[in-house]
Length: 251
Image (cartoon, rainbow, N blue to C red; front, side, top):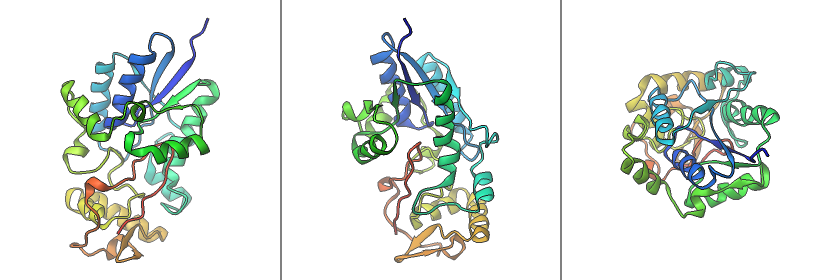
C-alpha cells in the first residue's frame, strides 16, 4: 500500500529546515515525506551551501521544483516581463516562482498534506494559508510552540552554520533586496551591505514605476530614499517570502 505523501517546502531559511526535520522525525515511518525547494536566482549563493548542509542533516535529498514558464527562476525576469514588482496583492515573483511552481508539481504529485516553515508567532499566516490555499497544512512548528529563535538554536546545536544572509543582518533568507519590504531600515541596510543590489532595484523600480519604500507615511522610489532614513528595527520585520505572499507596509 502506498504511503500518503507529505510535501515539505524548504525555503533555505532556518524555520523551514527545522520543519523538515520535525516532519521526518514524526511522519517518516508512516508517510512518504519529500523535501522540496524553489531555487531563486536572486537569493544569496550561500543559501545553496546551507541547502546541502541541511540535506546531510536530514539524510534525504532536497528536490528542486521550478515553474517551467520561468526556467531561469529569476525574480528580476518576472518583474521585467510583468512590468510590476510589488503591490497590495503581493509580488509576482512569489506567485510565478513559488506558488505556481508548487501547483505545477502538485499536478503530478498529489500530496496528502503540506508543511511550510510557519512558526508560533505566525498564526495569522497559518490561518490565511488554510483559508486561501490548502486546508491540509501541517503547522508542525507552531504546534510545538517553536518560534524563529528556537529554530536558530536547534540548527546551531545541531552544528549547522546559518545562511550568510542572517549573519549579514537580514531578517530572513529571502532574496536580497526583497520587493515585499517597504521599510527604509531594510532598504538602507541593502544599500550598505549590497550596494549593487540596491542600485539594480532602484533602477528597475524607477523604470517600471514601482515605489518600493515607505518614508514618513508616503510611498517613494528607492532613489529618493535618504541614506539616514529608518523605520522599525530589522529584527521586527515580517515579510518572509513563502508560497503564500503578502507584503509588509512599514515606515
